[in-house]
Image 1: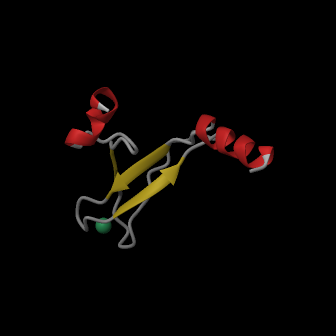
Image 2: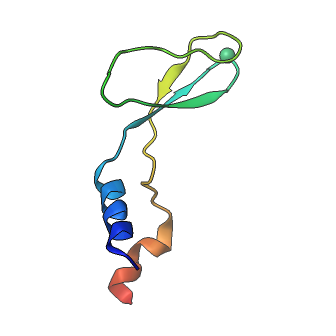
Length: 74
Ligand SMILES: [Zn+2]
């Protein structure tokens, strides 16, 4: 394994781009938007032209029971 790969992995871990999820209440359609440097409040529209609303989800954080405690009981 080369050092370059490890460095890339570290960079991926530390630079997390915030992802915002928008949902259309009428069509139940959702989309993800990444906001980085330009943080303008722009509301996306669905394919039918409705205004979408922000839905707050936390990607990567899941409390799904047993697996979470595995480290303690080995
Ligand atoms: Zn819609």
